[in-house]
Length: 323
Ligand SMILES: Nc1ncnc2c1ncn2[C@@H]1O[C@H](COP(=O)(O)OP(=O)(O)O)[C@@H](O)[C@H]1O
Ligand SMILES: [Mg+2]
Image (cartoon, rainbow, N blue to C red):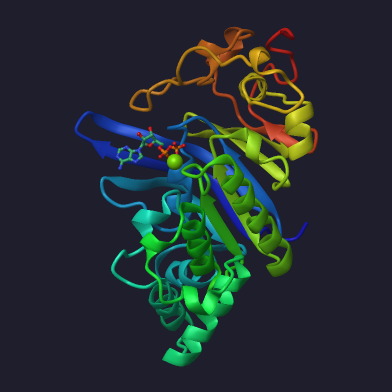
């Protein structure tokens, strides 16, 4: 096997709050290969963003990395070597493009600044590169657009600008954290198509973070499902949709709108995830799981399962009867 680009090994992240220690990540293990698109899915609060922040070196007080390792091409990401990697090899796109753009600077100035900072290009060349990047993310009339301000761009266009800035330094890995959540469905599809196109043309690896399993099918090769600060299942996208092994994944798919399933057949998973101040020892899903047994009170480790992995002693058992 070739060394994965990114390799996260038993990562633990804690936040020390006045109420106690929030165990946000409780042993996250996953890897991303070159050219691969990996989706991280899970309910709100499951630890998707904290995982991305840890990779980007953005965990700050009251948060801390409490254990585990993050490796880039096999080398631990820590200290100064990590800074280099974050600036150049790994880039990130956030959910809300309006808060990430400076309303007082033109789009061109902002992209050119990124380009100058990272590639050390002189002013005129940076502007040329900015126009090139705008075209690359599907913005027509790029030259003219450079002199406009963020408020003159629609939400979808602003997200395109954020993607342009993220790919400016030709990263190997792009992490997109809920990049389309603030956008309407049509624009959402366009942005996903753009990411898919860039993935092919630039040979990018992508981590797509989303709470919406419905958007991963066309874009992602592999899916990692998070629950209460842990990865509970990983697998090729087709396997996850056709043969989900973990009861939680089965529930997620049952509650995801699809073209071939009438809306009234959708069923949400009842209950809520456990709090992370005092997470349970065993399977965190067991209180909501219809097929839980005594053994579920023991810690569940990720085990090989088909072409992926699953952390469940009842893996593969149908948890819900067909509606
Ligand atoms: N700055 C913080 N202080 C305390 N807890 C935090 C902080 N940031 C995140 N958390 C906790 O970490 C957990 C995971 O959060 P997050 O990764 O943002 O979830 P997701 O992105 O999957 O919705 C949540 O329980 C959240 O409350
Ligand atoms: Mg999040």
